[in-house]
Amino acid sequence: MALARNLRRDDAGSFGVEFAIALPVLIALMIGILNFGLVFNANGSMRNAMGEGLRYAKVERTASDADVISVTRQSLVGVAPNAVQTLTFNRATVNNTETGTMTMTIVIQPIIPFAPLPPIRLTQTKSIYLPT
Image 1 (cartoon, rainbow, N blue to C red):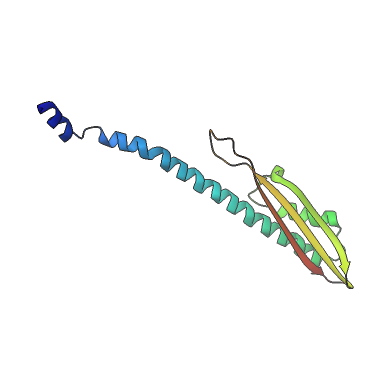
Image 2: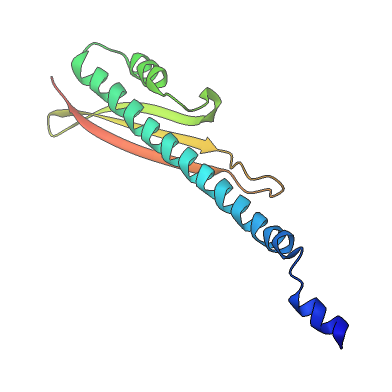
């Protein structure tokens, strides 16, 4: 009886047990926040680069499609160059109005150790009216 009473009162080592239970949850939360931040940054960078490329197409009327794509790639900051899967720019004339449409797809590998997750694919399409 005395041994059982002493064990109930003894809380030595309880911190270690609680820490061992909480640590994996905290690490998973931190990795999730990091991954969300990377995707959020890539999305913002992609939108900004596409805006710069389309602005260039609008300002430089004689720019070729390859020039517009090159400016867009140069404006892409914070994303690995090999992450860009597709980047296209097409001009079209609809109702006597010239338009430019750009589509970009970025593939991001999640940073989660010990879990083979599929890549995250971000796709964005923007269109503008081009002056004639």
